Amino acid sequence: MLHLRGCLLVVLMVLACAAAAETPPYTLSGSIVQGGIVFGKTLPGSRVYQDGQALRVSDAGDFLLGFTRDAPASSQFRIRLPDGRQIDETLEVKSREYQIQRIDGLPQQKVTPHGPGVLTRIRREGAVVSKARRRNDDRQDFLAGFIWPAKGPITGVYGSQRILNGQPRRPHFGVDVAAPVGTPVRAPAAGIVTLAEPDLFFSGGTLIIDHGHRLTSSFLHLHKLHVAVGDRVEQGELIAEVGATGRVTGAHLDWRMNLRDRRVDPQFLVPPMPDVHRISSSPGKP
Image 1 (cartoon, rainbow, N blue to C red):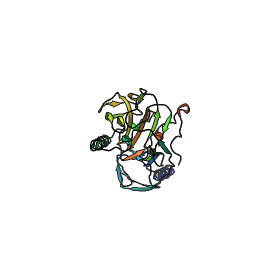
Image 2 (image 1 turned 120 degrees about the vertical axis):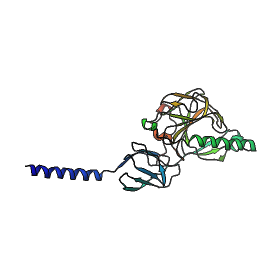
Image 3 (image 1 turned 180 degrees about the horizontal axis):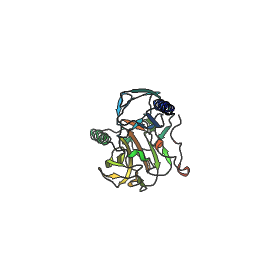
Image 4 (image 1 turned 90 degrees about the horizontal axis):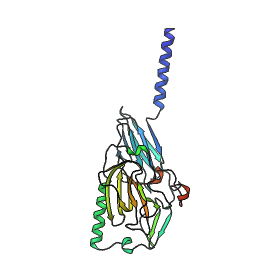
């Protein structure tokens, strides 16, 4: 009987080991699509790479993948596990169709800025914004989820090709929520304020919040800022007020998100806007 029990125990252990070997040592949750963001989890101590770029991995094994507006059809994903094993995967990235949005009535200087003083200002402000997105620490504020920073009609979506005063310009990389000047803007997730500028040339009043692992939210065209650089904010906290500053034709909030050097679509992280407020569709269909 003891011999039988011993054999049975060995069989169970072998089966358990086989099952463990078949279980992938990582999970991915999110949208593998142009503009999408994916939450990953792997074994603590692993190293993770996307398209050759080393990603931050938390002590608990959390990491983030991001896909640009025009990401190619595949992305190379690699994990080096603590035991020395290496896993290489090719992720299939779904494509999206993007809208064309025409906006007229903008001050021409905001569409085709000229003059040495203006161009110097634009370059200086661009450097300040880039620096604000370089914070890189092991907070995982993003794990608690996201809410809409403001509610209202969606008048512009991520990825749309912009035609400004009849001239083709860069695509739009945020989601625009129309609301009256003074409407509260609340933190969509906890984080650290890394930029608080009342008047940038293109974006007017501008805030940037870092949610950890270089995932940032930017809030543009603000009327009033209620936080300062270095402040920690919690989800739902009042951070600013909707405005009509910078390059705009009316009051609205432009909410953008960056993961490292990749611009991603905020709408993938929040539930659909309530129907009463929704004009355009949710993230572009693959």
